[in-house]
Image (cartoon, rainbow, N blue to C red):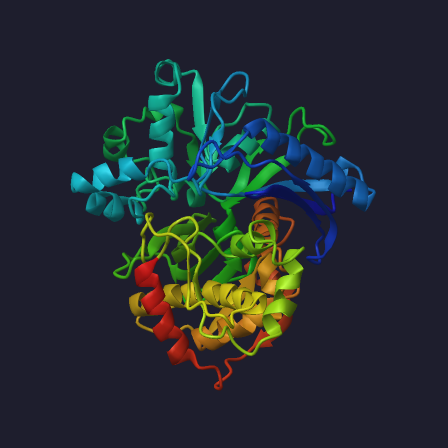
Length: 491
């Protein structure tokens, strides 16, 4: 009997597959990494074939761990690294080029040219986004211009564009389905936030033929059925889909306006549900589609910092201060403060609310007394400080304080980082027992799409608290902010 929802969480460095039962418990977890490709400084790519291989591997690992057959899966939900851009042959599934990853900065000159032409207000008004290399539209334009034969093949109808969700649902469904959900479409610079359709004027400005774009669907409906997937029977409905940060918002059951979450992954991403109407940010945030469910659309403010957990990986792999990411908490906690050291995590530019792609990481305040522990603590403080900038902008746009922020992602397990975040935000931090809420969001959307769970109130009962962190009034927040603002200007 089909008693599990399969959630495929396709991330920047690997793919996780969860099998979730009706009580919201994880019956099994499979994970498979894949290689990163760095053709030149500032460029980041993935091989789409390796993404698909990692997905198949993670599916097999999850089923094997649970000791159940594929027939026990009632539906599949997909969540994904969002802006990463793929272009493939729609008949064979073969990619025409590596995927261009959301972190890639190669289209910065193109974005600068569009800004010089005075087009940023138009893009912002239509899409809720800023003209930054982060988003898919300029990445797709780059592929069409720079991959030999791509434009002619696209115009002849042979190529399909998609973000990772679109690519995975196509592969899961035997290349019969070419769709994306509204949350992923809202990250492309190509979709009108109000009509939820591709915008012809924006497509023309970027010289993108509409014929290569997927059909936009809601986040919770039967989008296709499996065909020819190793380890799974044909006919399982793919019934849920959302970009990773929107899926995490849903997995944190932030269903009402004013409910917020922050995900600590490779980057950190803060989203607040703003209700059923898109609101333009006045403070450097993005307006995005959170999800569409039962014909109703929910929108969100989003602030993204490109580097969070990746800064800890840099301590491990680049500076070799630690042997594993889990060691950073003890090292940072071995000193009472950073000794005046400030770290700006602009290793891939600064995201919201600054939007400075040219910015670079900075470590300021070094003295002869600086130790490895001070560097580790400054890195954790830097992650929390950049989130403080995002939440301050969010509160300015909302005109109200955020009393509670829910947290998830791997780095949310770091108690010191969560306490620092509560101190610097001045708000309660709530951490759930299940930190992989991105996968939970995909599972919840798919389960609702096939009636596995009755409604959203049922899902609220599934969410459970692990720990709350309250602000510590003894933390010298004002002094930390003063040093931070000086450092950000120098980054």
